[in-house]
Image (tube, rainbow, N blue to C red; front, side, top):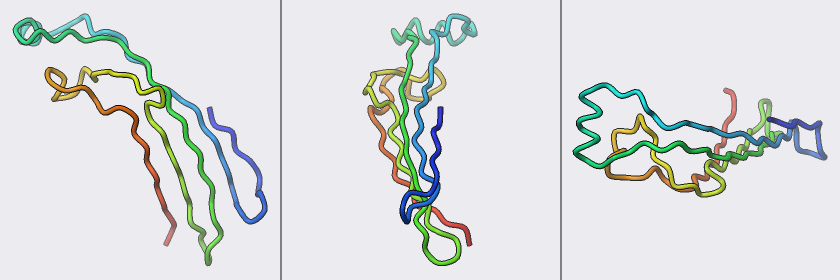
Amino acid sequence: MRLEGNRTGWLESPYFSVGGESDSRQRRLDPSEAEFFAESGYVSEGYSLLNVGAGVTIPTGREGLRVDLTLRNALDRNYTNFLSRYKTYALDPGRNLTLRLSTDF
């Protein structure tokens, strides 16, 4: 979900977003994967993540500077992505905070 606002003072196009990702436990495995996972002790688990973000455009010159801040896995959930190459020995990172600055040229 994304809530967008109008110009606020000298800031343009402010927004706030809330989103998520939900993955269920993987039950249908290729036979070679099932054998590998049985040997390693890996079991895929389902998980849900909460992501939040906000951003604004700061007028600078002709194009403006876009500032976006995103927090992925806001609740700091321990999870392992089934498609990760590291899934049998490492958890995915906890919270991930990203600051992005962009402009058109």
